[in-house]
Amino acid sequence: MITRFLMSAAALCLTAGVAAADYKLTILHTNDFHARFEPINKYDSGCKPEDNTEGKCFGGTARLATAIADARARAGNSILVDGGDQFQGTLFYTCYKGKLAAEMMNNLGYDAMTVGNHEFDDGPEVLRGFMDAVDFPVLMSNADVSGEDLLAGVLQKSTVIEVGGEKLGFIGLTPQDTDELASPGPNITFTDPSQAVQGEVDRLTAEGVNKIIVLSHSSYGVDQVVAANTTGVDVIVGGHSNTYLSNTSDRAAGPYPTMVNGVAIVQAYAYGKFLGELNVTFDDAGNVTSATGEPLIMDASVSEDPALVARIAEAAKPLDEIRNRVVAEAAEAIGGDRAACRSQECSMGSLIADAMLDRVRDQGIDVAIQNGGGIRASIDAGPVTMGEVLTVLPFQNTLSTFQVTGAVLLEALENGVSQIEDGAGRFPQVAGMTYAFDASQPAGSRISDVMIGGAALDPAKTYGVVSNNYVRNGGDGYKMFRSAENAYDFGPDLADVTAEFLAAQGPFTPYTDGRITVK
View 1: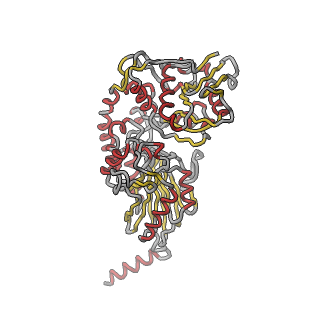
View 2: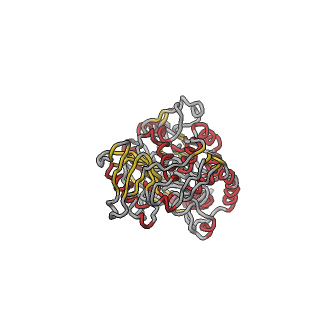
View 3: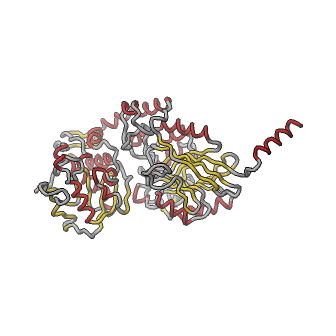
């Protein structure tokens, strides 16, 4: 009895001056992983094994596994959550749909995730299969799924998990325009995120839950609006906008965490390049008294888990079958010659641009622009394999849609022909428009005769544009697109779009039709 008393007294001394009710939680988080199970290069594309050996690569599930284990060892109470868009982006998704993502997430020990728009790319059926395979709840609050039999009663708006003796409430969010971004089907209605979150907060609070975390695949901007418009939310773990937040990098979009209305907002870029680590302290009433942390970069300093390296290599073997799969037929060779596609209209450029525009024309998009440098090969006449398409378009670029004025479009076209003498990759292959250029004129004043939809380009008019995410984010000198309105950079893979367009044509006869005139 004396020993027990002394031990209790010692414990009281050690905790003197510290609020016994304080609760500390480490939130580990990812978002927008997009099936990047293998390491990526600095451009977020596939990394060659020899480059990975030389320490030039980032991310990959095997690296994340090590970092997560290390972070858990440092922490007391911890959770691992995801901000959505595990689906789509590499051949792993094309081959396995959500099955490999479920296996890897179970292996890493996720506690919860929200539905991203790409989780609906193959309809509710694939999402339901993924949900049945994972060991954790998948959430989405701002949608009515009662009319969708595959999800009704299964896809919950929120959940409660107990960690370290405390109840944590989790609420899921997905983009309100998911019906325009993916294929959820006609039976799901998406609703306002702020109202949906507040409704779940009120319900959870009534049940005695005072620590509430929103898993939001809605973008950094929307997360700030939700934080400002609601009460009772403590943390928002974000996604969708692939936002890098940091307290140390001048490339960050904001601080980590970004505090709005007392809510700590975090996001960790994308593709598994970072693991978010937010350390939160709650008082007895569930208020956040401290929120600190920084995304951890998954570079060569983080070792790869050997068992996962082997498992992912095994999963990669069947991808060769996809690369050899015949997806279309070419009646004649489709020209993707480097010199041609960087200086004039080429048949591969017209094909790709037409495929892009065809995919999103019903979204109010007027024109397509594809940088010639993104076209890496030609395709021979005869059967067209997915491997051939991927050789032409190897960069895992996604479709980007946005709006700019005619004046900005003209600036973009001038940029595209500004280095034609050097064979620069910025040369613009287009669809939905025609233009002429004169390379003998000074750079910046070479473009003329721009026509869109049968009318001359109007500098003051706003046009809808589709390009690839590399160009939209300023690649090849297209910096004028960085400030575009209503930009969405995470559409389907450009190679998939091109393959599907080719397949729909029957035996495809390549063409050039005078959309670009050289003066």
